[in-house]
Length: 70
Image (tube, rainbow, N blue to C red; front, side, top):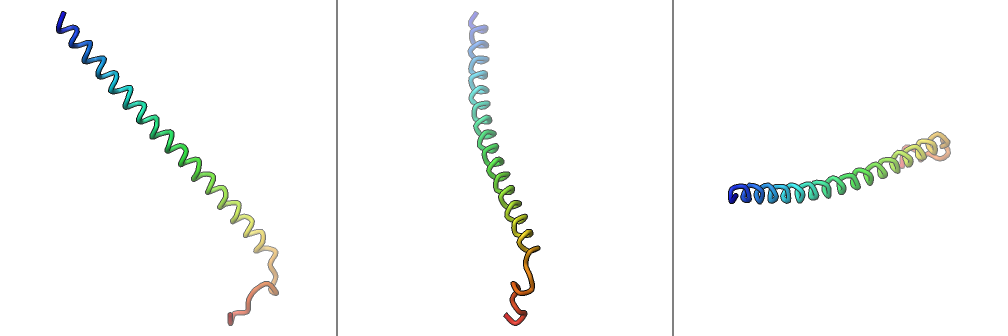
């Protein structure tokens, strides 16, 4: 009976360790997803700024440009 109890205790200990490890991994994944979402938002903002700049560039005239000697 003692051997069986030892095996059960060992299994319970292993399960507790695995549960803790899974929680840690879940926290890391959650933080990484937040970072990915933030990066995606930044990329979207940059794309929008580039689109707005290219639209403004299309509407520029020669009068808006500096002469080459500046």
